[in-house]
Image: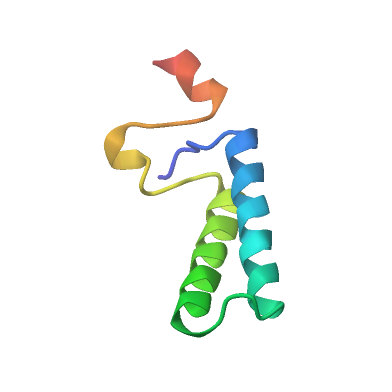
Length: 72
């Protein structure tokens, strides 16, 4: 089972970055392969924000939510 390892600020920053990436893509500021790659990152950022779990944090034992800090 996935334990939440992302805090509120972490999730908000990820959503903000995703919105910027999406905005840049649809404003044709970034295009091509780089644009597609950033759209994919935006999708991952939004998904991980909604589920409050980042798979890259897990192997390193990193977490940004206060509740997990209290348990360790």
